[in-house]
Length: 187
Image (cartoon, rainbow, N blue to C red):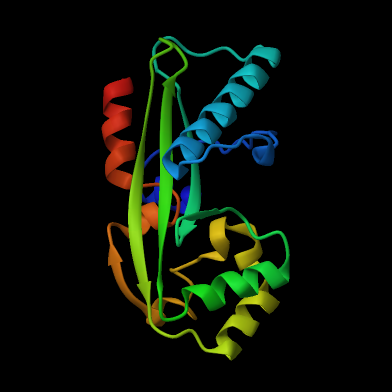
């Protein structure tokens, strides 16, 4: 989803994954957790770039954008479900209820060292989610790979979203307005 959002924003980019143990990083507040995870991802990638001895062209700044998203339901932080059963429970919980996403964006200018991050919170209200819809989503498996098992842009879920208080791109993991502002500041 983040790849799609960045492409829509018109940027040229390379995707790199950070090999970190996200479960080893714990914070009580979701806003602190997503920022800590984005920082850890950025640090891991920067250290990998330094090991690879990759030259950064001075003429064109290279920016590193790291991000993370969690879902908050009834005050509890939800990351990627650990099983199909957990994903099913998450979706049952959202049915006829609400959840929130907290997404972080951390931009680092690899040439100057400038680094700044922010988080964005969005609330999502759901209509009832039928059991057969939940079963289909679990069978497909995509909900197992996202924070809180939540993919509001999915064709089976989208019609059941009553209201999004905030932006859909933030729910999908990369708030465009925040990202654009941080990129401008980093350049």
